[in-house]
Image 1: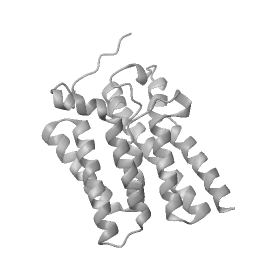
Image 2: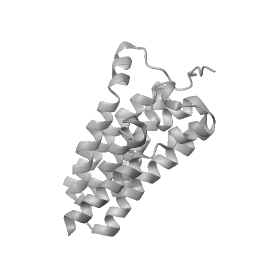
Image 3: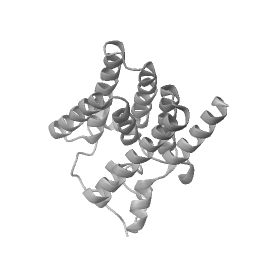
Length: 206
């Protein structure tokens, strides 16, 4: 019965993660965000296209769906490994949305939300690194990558030294590489010096 419930929770978590809030926010303003900028549905691309309100609405939605997946797993199964698996399912749904034929975001917002539930201090520390790097270099992608790396290190320390559940490390060891994988085009542009900086506009053709 446990595994049947787990399968059901993971399917629901994936479907929750697949909800493309950024795409919906864009459509409400007459813009298909998958056609412009990076083509991603995450907060960064939506923010470039629609401004801070679009970013905020997208970020809240993307974080909320991942948190809902984790809380559902905890409620139904009361198991942190199941919660970690549900969090990953939501991230996968976000990255490869069922509703957008496999298109989606890069997984930063949902992963941060899951980590916020698992280890708030580690998540906040990663968030601080994220913000500081963006303020310093003005590359959101670089901030995301360094914040992710810092979060991974923090989870390792929290589990090994702080005694937090190993399930959290299991989540981080999969979620962090997924974020780097989804940023592979950004990494290439960062190395080539062609990555778009924060504040550079994206042209929307009408």
